[in-house]
Amino acid sequence: MAQRLGFWLLATGLSAASSTIAAAQESSKKFALHEAPKPIAAIRFEDGQGQSRGMVDFRGKVVVLNIWATWCIPCRKEMPALDHLQAVLGGANFEVVVLSIDRGGKDVVRKFFANVGIQKLTMYLDTSGKATHELGVVGLPTTLLVDSEGREIGRLIGPAEWDAPDMLEFVSCIISFVHAVQSQKDSKAVISSCREHSIGLPADGKRSNTQP
Image (cartoon, rainbow, N blue to C red; front, side, top):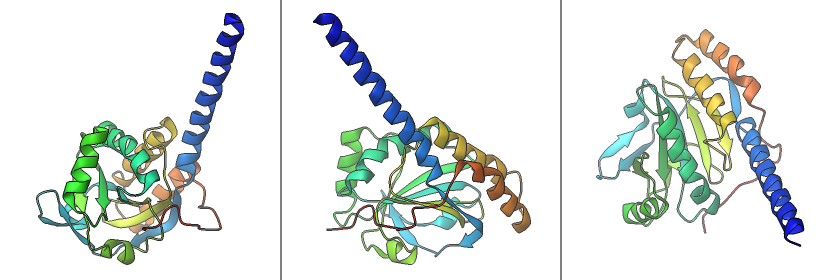
């Protein structure tokens, strides 16, 4: 009996591990890379101290811009992985920017960050929700991949395994190539070089989560 139970636990563990690995591999493939960089709206938002900020403040860095909210369950689940992504790759050339659209403001976000142990991410808020309209966000979470010139080079609708090996490799590829080249022509080469890690978004384009 004990032996059968042991085999069952082992099989269950292997099955769960396989599912996690498969999900991780699919994460980077969901990123839809554009054929050429696209300009993005000059959105404004606030940091945790109430100071006005914008994407121009991150010029010179590759940015993973994640639009989220605490009421969005997939957003909540992926936040620790985004925190780990920042811990692993964050620095002079890269930053994860998580922009909350919670109407409850910084207290709601601060409480959530504390509850799940977020340590490396900085709080940014857009309580007006204008950023979602200006960026063409149709569901949460939505993540924009922004190059060092402040242009959108890719987009992912839905959650991802941000600290999975495949995703870390994909983001590292983008960072390396973006900072190795600067011209518009070379930007296209960047996208082509990293495209093997990505496939297009689902054709139905369904929303992952909508605000109540």
